Every structure is written in structure tokens, then in C-alpha cells.
Length: 496
Image (cartoon, rainbow, N blue to C red; front, side):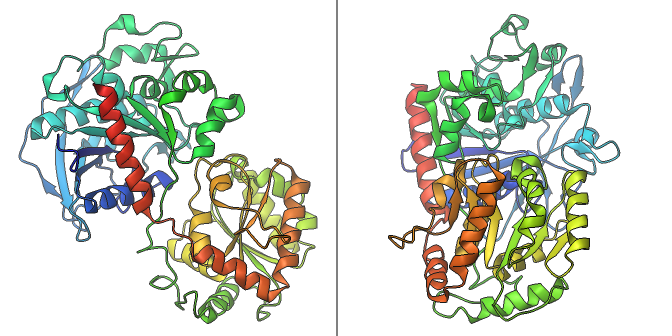
């Protein structure tokens, strides 16, 4: 293995631009391309879901016939399709099995609103299928980089069923946690479907979690190294059950092998100078386009224009307790009595759909709620808002605060996870900071912080300074990708 060039298999259940439900897809779409530009050889592996357009992405079938994959007493066959995108040398590989993957959603049955009942089998096939496909290709990776619970069995397989397989003798494994709350826990009887020694499942074993089989726990326990998507979140998830979701113990046992790397963002997509989804481009030297985008955003959302006198707060989020909407519910009336306007984009829990519908009905000139996923509107909210609100209970990394900084949209956040690592509270005594942040998960603190931001907005010279402080920061993927390469090397050194 040449130290200056690694062969990396990047395994993710979702990848932009092919299939997405959350921020993991953005990471999986961007990080491999930057690693490739740094000189490494990358293959990204994901399931071939129904939503992936074969013609659009010019998917081509690989001429190979992998052995059927055992799933308990069943066997499943895989086809492999491949794509190349114009902007990188990365090869994108898709594991195709129509029975398991050709469905309307990635993980959840939209008829019931519940996870697919056979998600265990779907991602046993994904994990074991990934290893078999690599063998069929004859492509021996130095690193297999696994992401979230859906690929958590890969480190386990490498140390059990494939332990004596010479093909993977020199392969190390990094396991990335993007959100610890989603763990892939299944009834204990599912364990036999893995096809590994039945004696490996016992209380406190790497596979067992409160009498269940945990895909994520097995990934944490068996990977050479583990990382998550911010240094603060890496500490938080070891600190107790509030952040650790029951896995804080096993994470603490691996504290010397657990690291945090902030996600980067793709400035080819999220950059007001080149953003093709916003009507008016702008940059730090000429901010006039930002005000024009604001007026467009107000018009589009049927809110009165006021030429910059009233701050506009943007929110793009899953509408759930984790994202801090229970705090907003507690102060909803007082919040909308402040001198502000709010535009919200997202879907989630029905109780928040109803909350915001009621707020909009009561204050039609102050708040507009868009219960949808709309990428174009998301870009306009980033470009047209003065502030961006993220009062999260926990936030492993967060991407929107990073987008907001680049767009001169000042973040208002709770100090947790990646929000704590990237947003520094404005200090009027020193003039330092790039946003507004509060510590305790408390509705009054949230309201107080929003009021501080509104007061600061009135000082246009100060506000411009805050905007520019964010726009000049660099959260591109290159710095993060370099840190990942260092982790890969460290994982390989542990292998030996």
C-alpha cells in the first residue's frame, strides 16, 4: 500500500445526487470526490433504489455474477451497476435487487409510516453483498469507510465470517456515526440471519444491545477506528444517555479510537457567487444581491416587503423535537410579537405541522410555513434570510449553519455538537463571533438570544461585519478530507 495513494471503498446507504433522506447523503456525495482529487482511488457503494434514475445517470451493468448472499435460510442475488459523473473520477457502484430495494422510500413504508419490516434483511444483504462484490471485482481496498447503522455489519463481518479471508487481510475499517439516535436494532432472533457463529451473541457482546441485535453497536465495537461528524458530538455521545442513546458505555470503551471531524460543504453548490438556484448572485464585496433575494423570498411567501427594516429568519429542518421545535412551541406567541418575520421549510411531526399552521393563521404577515421538500426554495431561504435558526436539542454536525455563514445569513443556534464547534457567540465587548448561541436547552434562553440578534440587526455596520465574518470562513471539504486521510492511515496502523 503506497502511503500517498489509498484504495477506499466508501459505503453509504444514501448518496447525493442519487438518493437522499438526510445530511449523510450530502457527505457521501461530496467527501469521496474531494478524496479522489487528493489522489486516492475511490469506489462508492450504495443500494440501487427505485428513485435512482438509470437513464439519467447512465447506469451500466457490470459483467459479473456474484454468488448468492445468504440471509438466514434465504439467499439473495445481486446485480451490480456502475456510474461515472462528469465532475470526478469516483466510480459509483449500485447493488441491485428489486425485491429488497425497488421501493418508494429508502427505509420506511409510506403506506404505514413505519420502517420496512425487513430492513434487517435489506441491510444484511447490503453489508455482506458489499464484501462479496469487492471480491468479485478483484479490487482490494486499503480502507472500507462505513457510514451509519445500515453498514454497521461490515466491520463485524470482517472480524467474524471474513476473518480468515486473505482478500481482506490488509483492509482496515473506519466507522462513521452521523446520528447515534438511529441504531438499527432488531429482535435477537434476527442474529441467525447474519450467518456468523451463534456463540457471538450473548449479553454485553459486540452484537447485543438490551437483548436485541444492534447493527450500530457491532460497527462501533468491531471497526478499527470510529468517528463522528464533530469533535463536540464525539464527546457528548460518551457523556450519558441524553446524547449516547444507551451506547455511551461502548463508546467510552473506545474513547481512544473515537474522533470527531466537522463535515465540509460543497461550495460548488452552496455559494451565493455561483448558486444557479437563486435569482441574484452576490459576494462579500457586493452584497446588494442579498437584499434582492430577500424581497423575492418575501414576495414568494406572501409576506409584506419592508426594504430591510425587519429581520427575516429562515428555518429549513425536519420538524421534530430533536431540532428544538418544542422550545419554539413554548414561546410561539411571544416570538411572533417580536419585530421579525419567519419563513419555514420542512416536514415532520404532525403536532408541529399543526402548530405552525395555527401560528400562520394568527400572524399571516409574520410567518409562512412550507410543509414540503423544495431544494430551490431552500437555496432562496439561505440567500434571502437575514438570520437562520437552529435551536437543536442535539446536532451531530449540522450543515445549514455552514451554508448560512457562506450566504451571509447569521446563525442563531444552541451550543451543541457541530453547532458549538462552528458558531461563536457574538461578543459586543470584543466584536468577535460569527453568530448567536445559547447554552441551556431552555425556551427563555432561545427567546433572549433571538432578541439579542434582532437588536444587533438594527446596527447595520455591526450586522455587515457579522455577515462578512461568516462569509470569509472556509468550511470546504478539503480540510475535512485531509483529516479523514489521517484517520485512514491511523486505522491502517492499528490493523498492524
